[in-house]
Image (tube, rainbow, N blue to C red):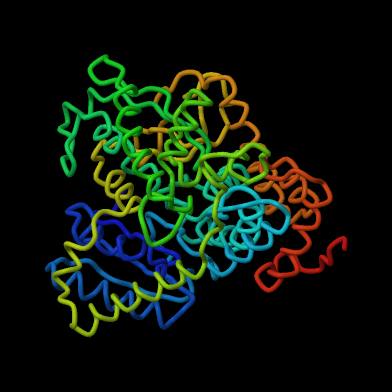
Length: 466
């Protein structure tokens, strides 16, 4: 029998992208606010800060939310209904290493956490811990849903589904969370800041699919009328403004834009289809690697800026301290944040709210001409039985071929990290869309392994080929 109130365990609560939003959602949701939020983080100092913040937010909102905290996940897993995985090991620092070393071998990564050497090595760093979480959940909370939020989310999500079939799991990403609303505004259906009515949402037929971070828009019909031309017209205006700024096409910096809109428009003009997560998708494509002979209007990708990300992290922790010491009123927390994708899903599942979301899971026929077990990001119905992908149709030729290469890279990576098989991980990089030389691929693999050996304990004993 389902308990009255849910227990949600967040492993990696110190993740500032997601931990604070999870606190907000748990405290504000009528479905969740009488439940239990268990925060887990290996950094006891940060954990205590987040626990204190959660208790302060709950008290301010007058809710019965119970807060637990532990550095050992096994202490709080019993009784869990949901387990959210959102941790990372020195994420910015290692991604910076991945991007700098890869650039020496002609591979430019503006994000460095899902494709290319950055995707493979982040999976090597993170999946052994994810695997441990899966084993503990099966032992201590076998009925809990596990929601993976850790990049490369496609690799980790497919590894959990393929190698832990008895585990109830799926994977998510925040990049698609507001896609339908963003496209509706671009099409002129919604004004800025306006939310769709239920009738508008039902009439808005958006179909987008693909591997996580490599999704393309296949349909955008409103009341039976194709609105992609309106979206493109809006994008042309924004792309022109972005090009005038002469900004670098970074995935992360202190400003908006990063030339994402010009790149998105160029993809549509040349490939015939519109990417929906351009900040990542541009890294999956070889066109902005700076190898062309012909001059291009759009410059090569700039590398992920680890220092900027670390600076942002420090700033956010100072904000947390300000909430705790009272220099910033805790009431401001309610207006500064909003729903978190993971706990938004939890709310929908537990309350049977019948909302639909983009979720990473098996295809199961949603895309007609791709395998049923292709691990794709798809628009899904969702309840306590899990996600059910809605029909997409057929993936266009050309785009589908690019996706299949990405999926094979991810599948090899997932198998390699699960089996601790370095030959499979090398092969994953050799079939990766960003590598172009066998010798360079081996060299970048060896150099990254030596540079990150402290974080690759599950693979120790390897000495490289150099």
